[in-house]
Image (cartoon, rainbow, N blue to C red; front, side, top):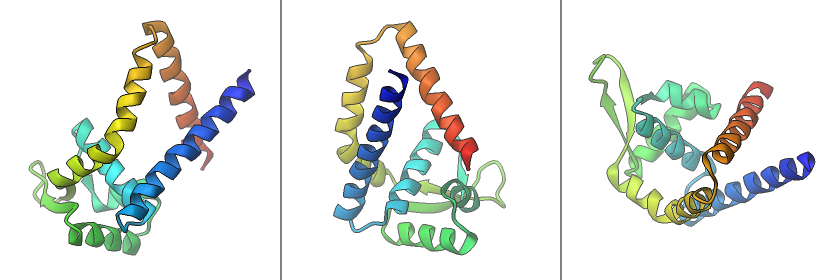
Length: 144
């Protein structure tokens, strides 16, 4: 049973990756561009800003690759560079509002379906799902 669930998780990760790759392809983007936008959405949702350096570190890019990525996304109108309100020396990369709406249009139905599925679980089951996914994520992060 355990291996069946692990294999199902792997298949889910593959399908999610394909979904993201289709979005990138349909919009003339590289999959790393989409990963960057997702990282920026996560940072925005958590109320933490991302510098280009931190974004690059999250994506496993070097400085030149990060600069090229941010320049490309800025040119496409997806992000902007802004000075941090806490430390004016720090420049943050932020999403343009239209990019958030654009991402929601593509990924929203999938997210909505996932939320709908989760509503069928009780608190104990949700805690188990959260614990499992957090543990797998942490294991994967430590495997690098």
